[in-house]
Image (cartoon, rainbow, N blue to C red; front, side, top):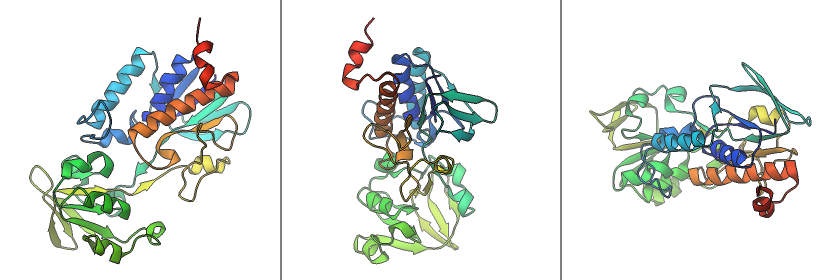
Length: 304
């Protein structure tokens, strides 16, 4: 096999389309369901050609395009062991073992979710009904509305530029404390709070958040805490930055020959457009690695 793509989100799908067009022998493995976090977006306002569509609708279109190209994603197929150093790279899952000359890592990130970290009541019920995980995706839907952000304090500044009254529920993450303080939030008219969210309330859509027994009227709550989940890759020698994101160059190469990475796992910005571009670049780089043909020669190399 030429290539194993680990991750079936936008980056992995984009890599798959290009790998298919380039005639590579490959497989896409996805731990959960195709699409990743894009599935959570109620309405995406910043992706050309798909403005106003839900994340699920966009992923369905992607999957349709893959099917027309004969590309399938194997899921659920979580990876539990990997060898990236050997010339024949090995990827082991709970049910099978795959060997390939190259690997693209496109496993993205995952949101921690308050139900896991703080025991909030009502998270699932209000997801897409006032509760969002992605300010960049859903923020424009909350123009002029009162919102609260928990997670990255940077997202509170982003939402303040769109929303009405903006709350940030602290504490501020340790890695952000050098740049952001309570005073800076206050100076930008962002109300800083601390406490535990007990539950979300509302009839059909979110209307209030209960923090330590106090009801705060809101129309939007953004939970933006993420984790990378790159521990498995770090164990086999993949270089990451201080936050756990995989280091790559402009051609999506990692520090290990024949191993590439694309999408959210390479760091910000966490956008569909960025993931698609990186997935395409990674697949083109795989082709160059396997054949020695540069990207600008691909048109000639694909001629019959």
